[in-house]
Image 1 (cartoon, rainbow, N blue to C red):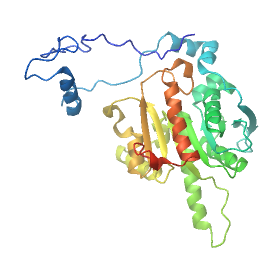
Image 2 (cartoon, helix red, strand yellow; image 1 turned 180 degrees about the horizontal axis):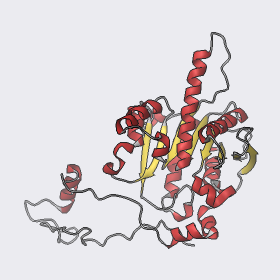
Image 3 (cartoon, one colour; image 1 turned 90 degrees about the vertical axis):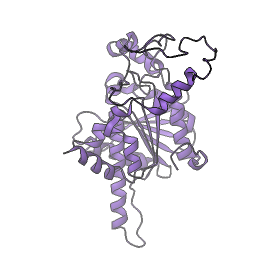
Image 4 (tube, helix red, strand yellow; image 1 turned 60 degrees about the vertical axis):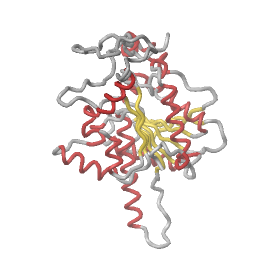
Amino acid sequence: MKAGNDAPEPTEPGRATEPGNHTEPGDHAAPGEPAAPGEPTRAERSRARALQGPTPGKPVKPVGPPAAGPRTWAVAHWAVAARLSAAPRPSGVTVADSRLAEPFASVDVRSYHPGTESARAVIVYFPASAELDALRHRAGEWLCGSLSQRLGVVVVRVAVGSGVVDAHQAAYAAVRWAAAEHPDAPLAILGAADGGSLAARAAMIARDENSRDELRRGPGDTPTATPHLLRQALIAPDFSLIAGPPATAEALVTSLVARLSELPPTLVQRATTTSAQLADENLAVLLREAGVAVREIEYPPTVLSWASYPRAVAHSGRALADLEAFFRRGLIDDGFDIVPAWNVH
């Protein structure tokens, strides 16, 4: 099956994309032909419009995922198409399955090991619930195995079922389990879609528990086993699940900024959209307001998630490389200061 990303076909050069578009001097010049003396070139006019921004009063055309194509329909309706688009676990990576203790015994955890003697670090991954429903035990195979193989780390995939009463506490229990299994390894957290919301909430609980432990700890007391997260990566996280139901729009921003403070340096991977669409739901901006070091990377909008179905999304390789670089610099090399373009230091 040929890989694709269900993206719309590109517009032909010179063809109007919106009704009412008009031509300007030089628009019909041949490629490479200079504009008339004293007139700006097409490139100069385009750059000026980009710097100027949207015209006041003119509605901003939303940037959203393209219409579902045949491949998206096939993935949604045929289990075989979903499995083929998901990609297998890389060779050489071994897995071990476990379950959490009560009261979260229904939570499954699968550990991906790179084959090395000791783990350089541990990444706890919460996949999207839609991926878990569609792929079941195959969920996260490609992403977890690829990160484990490339970084030489253990990746723990957590499946929080719908029957769990408190999913946030269950997610935090999974983080504690991973920290206890690998007490000397640096720890990070990763989540996609609503799994990204679970990851963020687990990071908040871990931060709060660490703060309480510091307040309770007396001189000479041994630190508790509360996990300390060094990095957090969120793939298209569900903003509403992170924020919770606010009383007012002002309360949403105020309370959320307070809750986001003191979280670990964060990578947010999301689809390209307009600032008007984001409005108060720009997680990266809120994280910065809360004093969290954050890096945000945008990718072309697609119906399918690159983390779930990498063979069906063209930019899945680039997104994985970005994620690998984020964790490598934060967990393995500890060298954010050598990459000034990354606002994470």
